[in-house]
Picture (cartoon, rainbow, N blue to C red):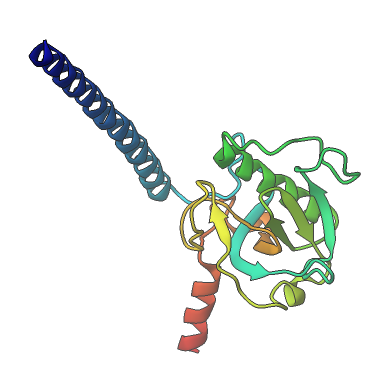
Length: 206
């Protein structure tokens, strides 16, 4: 009797182990597939002409990535909060909630709306902060870097932002990811990234 019980116990242990081993590779395979899909998407985006006007097809405002910069709530580097998408009861709420499930598409839209709002006011720079806030300032060209640079900005996949990579970025809390609005004639929407890098290179050659 004891031998039978022991055999049954071993059978259940082995069967249970096999079940777990079967599920774990499946989970890894799904994760690997997801990672490959994201990598393929990024490669496809990099190979295409860079276009920061892409939001539901086209954004009517050209803008380029500048970089990630610190901010302070008591004295904003970009003084005007044009709108925000996170607090529905706030009077400055845009009416559009953050889409955390499809943040890549949402972030393009956020950047486009912020660029349009800034341009309507005659501003030439704007910043995206805390995943859903739009800031700008009439004197942003000289104020956006008043607190120095930061590394606390994310891309459309919630990963560390690369200034020279495809896709928009956004600052975390009390951090702006800053963009510059360009004239429509500057490239018809095909705007190069790495503006800071190009400027540094030009400075070194001069």
